[in-house]
Image 1: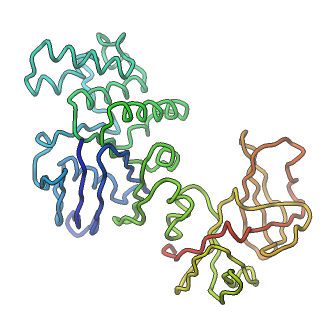
Image 2 (image 1 turned 90 degrees about the vertical axis):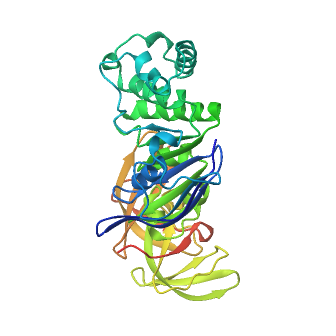
Image 3 (image 1 turned 120 degrees about the vertical axis):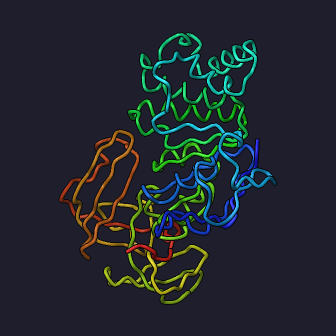
Length: 360
């Protein structure tokens, strides 16, 4: 296992800067995820760790060893690609054994290592099959086995589940996490899927436009986003432009022009910058048919009710002209509000987060 240290990394392709001034330390045995939209720099960063790209500026270190310009085959990393990159003319055994044969291991050692890893990925009964005869999930397991069998110091996965259906993605998330815990290997995972990142990671780095916006645990990223991009990209949120007014009695007061009223926040952190937004998660928004009193109560009309099984999403059109999304656990049809009905929306003071505005 290795600690990965990225120091002041910048990568340019001609006039395009794909990654800008990135500093990251990924700890030994950590499951670390690069998360962000397409073209944000996450895969470019992964490829610099793998050695497929060299940084324009900065250093890549494994533990204390400078790996910045070391070729991929000398880094002892295992890579799982989005398209798996398996050899269709080979059997499962031959695909998994390929890296060991390149390393010129003895035939007996190869057989032992391949049989061991195939058992761990639950493919022992498929070793003689052509990979073209396997399902998508089985091919994914072969790709994982091939990366793990060489006993890499670092496991790199580039959106490995994007080609699978929803149910199979859920199964493979659990499988990858089980294997990572069993091998205790430093793992770096690239995805644009927030659910994957939140459910699998020890820590997450959120990327946008080639820059790392925030690094933290899943709960830190979700509950304490540092700006409106992170708040909106990680899950769903309601965003309202506000301006700081004053602080009174352990409350921060912000004025919303679109709502034409003061919003009271009990966050413990006052923020007064040029452009700010109020962020509140849908599960924190309370919707009721009668006024609950208190602060931050808004009047509106139910525009849409969406039933998703475990939860119910309610979209409310406020009298001020903006929409607020609320999410509740499904506790039975009698609890659903009716589309078109008048409701009161409350934004609890302790559930609001004020963040800088970085998006237009």
